[in-house]
Length: 274
Image (tube, rainbow, N blue to C red; front, side, top):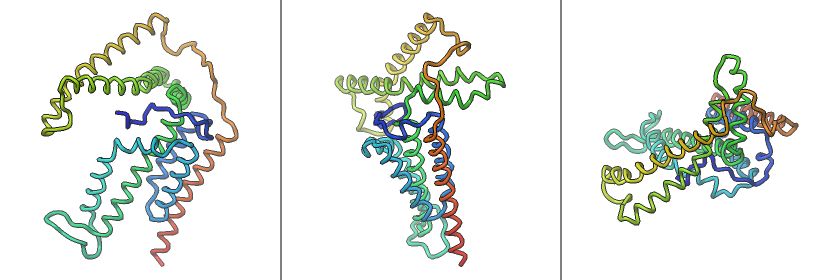
C-alpha cells in the first residue's frame, strides 16, 4: 500500500511544484498523449530523457519516485512477456518452443511497451501526485470542469468526492498496515501457502478495514452536516489560482516536446524509406 503514489504529496519547492494545478493537469494529459505518439527508437530515447529531466526538476529523491513503479512491476513483467512472445516478426525467429516464438521485433516491441507504461506512471506521479496537493488537485479539476455546470452537472460534488477519496488514501494505507501487523501478531500468515490460502488469509484484514472505512465515512458525513455543508452554492475559495508566465511557458515547452517526438517519428520513417 505504501507503494501507491496517488495522494502522497512530496514538497520540495521546485518550479514544477509552483505551477498552477490546472496547468499541471494539462501537462499530464499532454505527456500521456506524447507517450502514445512514440513509435521509433529515437522518440523513445527522447521520451526517456525528458521524463528523467522532469524527475530531476522536481528535486524529489529518485527512490521516492521509483516507489510508484513497484506497484506495477508485475504488470510490466507480464506486458513485456506477452509482447515479446506474441509479436510476429518478418525474419527468422530467435527460438520457438510450443506456442512461444520470439522474434527480434518482439523484443523491441516489448521494450517499447514497458518503457511507455513506465513513462506514463512516472509522468502522472510527477504532475498529479508528488507535486500537487489533494486540495489543489480537486480545485483544479473543478475549475477545468466548470463549463459543464451549464449542463447542470454536479461538478462541485464530483470534485469534493475526489478530494475526500485522495485525502483518505494515506489513512487507509496506514490502517491496513496496522491491521496486518495486528493479525501477524496473532499468528496470521500472508506470504506462504497456495494462492487460495493466501486469499483466505486476507479476510481478517479486509473485514475490519471495511468496517473502519464505513465508520470514518459516517463520522465525516455527520461532521459535514453539523457544519451546514450543502454543496458548492454560494461558497468562495480562500485561494484563487491565477495563471502566470511560467505556467504558459510550461505548456509551450510540453507542446514543443510532443511535437519533437512526432518529428523524430517522421525522421525515422523517412530514414527507413531511404
